[in-house]
Amino acid sequence: MPAYFSLDMEFNRYEVDFDTVKQIEERLERAGLVFRSGYWGKAEQRSREEIILHNQTLLEEDFMLGFEQHHDEGYWQSEYDCDGFSSVRGYFMNNYPIKGEFSFILLVVEDEVLDWDSEGTPYRKDAIERLRELAKKLWEMPQIRSIQTGLEGDDSITPESEYREGAPIAAHPFAIISERYFTKQDESLYEAEHIPFGGVLLTDKKARF
Image (cartoon, rainbow, N blue to C red; front, side, top):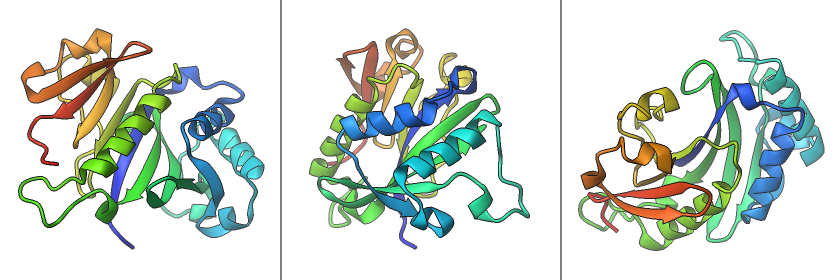
């Protein structure tokens, strides 16, 4: 299994509606992600509609997979086609990063995002630019609280309850945060771009491209 770069969309469970999963899938499609198939286990034999219904049911039930349960009993993953990447996987994590929230996480093979021939933090400029543009389109979904990124082995993303009080957001190498919380961040650490729908795209100044 390769290492992955992650792009995490943070949501509040109090905003879960009857069609939340469908809304997320439609937003992904408008942003340029094309559903390829289900991924891993039973999901591989299921249609997009079946995966949406399954995940919606679990999300409404506030389901979390137990340690002794089979992964097929949990949220089903999907695989997407995305320009410039061999594939993108997507899956739900409920009550993550904290209870009362959930995340939808996109995974890209880390080697397609990093340039190991570079010095410092070796990000591929073209790959990160595509991911930043993707994140901007995803941010148009009003239920998204933040978009945070990281590499394999990084700490978990920062919940809204913490970054709104000034805790650093996970921006490895970028994140999108609401304008209302931007001033709580250490602005000296980031290049900031104000974007539509009340967001600020933050890029880590220490990141090398």
